[in-house]
Amino acid sequence: MANITLLDGSIGQELVNRSGVTPDGTWSTRTLKEMPHLIQEVHEDYFRAGATIATTNTYTLHRDRLARFELEHEFESLNQQACQLAVAARERFGGGLIAGSLGPSGGSYQPELAPEPAVAARWFQELAEVQAPYVDLFLLETMSSVEQARGALMGACRVGKPVWLAVSVLDDDGTRLRSGEAVSDILPLVSEFPLEALLVNCSTPEAINQSIPRLNGVTVALGAYANGFTHISTAFRQPGASVIELSEREDLDPLRYADYAEQWVADGATIIGGCCCVGPAHIAELHKRFG
Image (tube, rainbow, N blue to C red; front, side, top):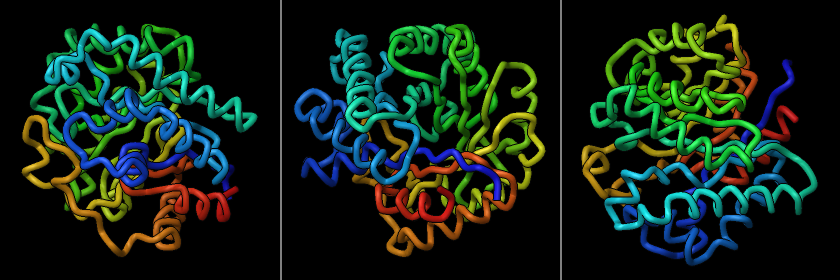
């Protein structure tokens, strides 16, 4: 079996579980401001479980998202603090890489809200520049259309760090991005930009089963990290919505999740991890199988 790079799992859902806070549109940012020790604790737990990469708690720290809650003035300091917590966890653990999470512009699963690529490029370049002193690579997460991914890549690739791109596909048809485009339509970006990895994320494991074979043969590392939601509801796509609008499936224990991951590896994936609702126990099982 190929050597597997093991990512961490969910950050936001773990913070909900550990903080006891009812999630709203600012829950991960509130935790960063009010209970930063929990974030470092989550990173450390993933390292202990076997992950070799810690993903920063910066997925939602875009200027436009912060502006909705009158927090845009803290854009730089919040991104820096989140990165510093991941670095502190690595230092405490004794090794590993830091991936700077750059979430989608506009909103998750809503590529129609993303600005045109030239505008997005400026946003993502600024984000990447703030995070660059702390991270080893940038992970562009949950990109749901070709143009949304293009804008993010245009910005992040200007900063001089390795860039990984993760795209999200439809829960009921993993052959298509959430925009409706074929997942294979993302492949020209691999030759257009200096990517080091292409992944599928924040989709059901069953959908990823359909995606990975259509991306196999790509010239960069291939990876996958699924979520544990039953589906992405219409209510979650509304401005200011939170994960309270989503339901967690009850049949995705660590053993079953690892079974799905074995299929992704068989289909060519060499980077494996977890997204929303996939926690340290899942990562520990992946480490047992692939470590």
